[in-house]
Length: 114
Image 1: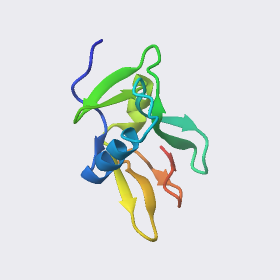
Image 2: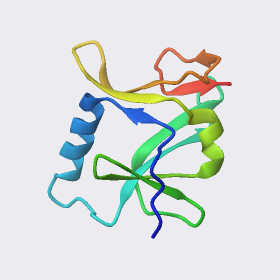
Image 3: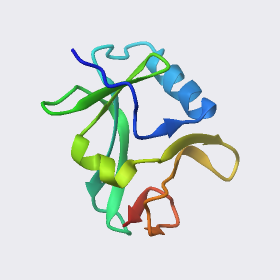
Image 4: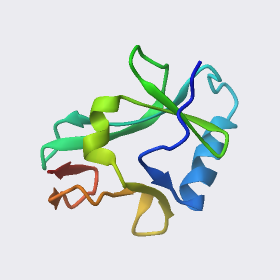
């Protein structure tokens, strides 16, 4: 298994902490890795994908502070330079995406256009 060293996205300490918390929950499938990507849909054209999944053929694998991350290489053009954060406030709770490649972003922050 080859692991690429430089991931095209970054994670804040808050996001890394929440990911570690999710991975430490009882019943977590330790054979899964954190998938970062995009899919068609959402009010702005593309939606972010962030969840645990098994590595598919062609996926690139990265390690971020010992967290295994997988990414379809064709998604890098949309995600390169993006920062993923975790918000835990009263008005905003969940993962947020700061994507320099997005020309438009929806109000909920989960979809974007390029």
